[in-house]
Image 1 (cartoon, rainbow, N blue to C red):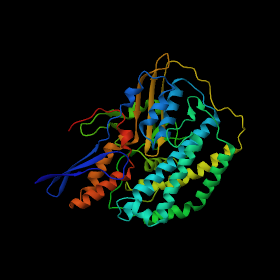
Image 2 (image 1 turned 120 degrees about the horizontal axis):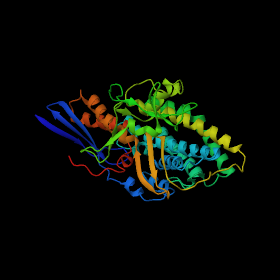
Image 3 (image 1 turned 90 degrees about the horizontal axis):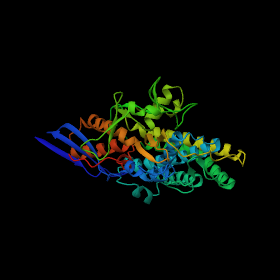
Image 4 (image 1 turned 90 degrees about the vertical axis):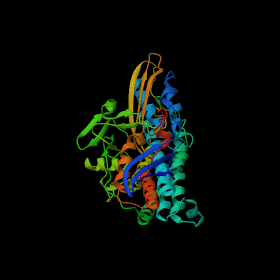
Length: 420
């Protein structure tokens, strides 16, 4: 007898979605991941707008991911206009990007994942019981927010980054206070990371599916680059992203599916650390486990790396010439620009075509969750295939989806509503 099990809503993920499981008796026959957040239509909204409006508007896709969306949009617009961004501005932008990664990883690991280890429905019972790990996790998220506020001008939708560079340099006292706080986090990080790893309780799972895909960063582990890497010695230029990722609408989801002949792809922290290790960098960031829940451990390891990088950037900024330039020359005009950065959840691509007045003719945004959408469904089918109890199916399905740290608000930025 055929039946259908619907997991609606998916809990402890950003945005609204559900999983539909088709069963023939106790045998799983099909899985569908439906991302049901209302379509946002940002790409159409940008058409006709001036180039300097683009970053301000597009970062409204998501509050959690606002910094990386703005920074990626800025890089794409600057590429279209051939703007040279000063070194100091790039350092401040990297600091802002890292703050976003710390706050997002802390939110995911300690607020959304941690309750699963104690079979709780939310973080609230842990905080009521003064759970040390939960309290430290929330404090770490607040620290990441402070980095974004000091560098970006406010916690979400930063105002300091502008086309050409940055509007201002944070005060020395602010940077010193941030450095002191960062050093404090680095001192307790081994204990904090060890406590999280000790609490981990994962459901049975096979190896993570998908071809890892990430930005190829020059000079070591990083989040920005000009290549899209999908294996040792295998990459394409960011400008040629459409050759690798073809977006298409799917009837069962409000988000486009982004895939290609080399895929299906896996993006996110696990993909980043695996690809980096294959190139001889970041070996210590790769978790021992190979299932998709290891993405959470990769995020944990990456958070420790981000704290170290924030410290190094702050120390360098405090020794930088106070009058160093912050903004390059910007001349409006026609052009086409593409940029890729690593959002906390994976590869993010922005592409803009500008006319002779510097207005947007075409906009394309490819988000991590859109890329992961297909592989999530495939992983669900693989990890749920041997389970025949509805309660366990629901629990494991939610945990598999949650492991990818999906951002559904970002994923539904453009697609018209589909009907199954």
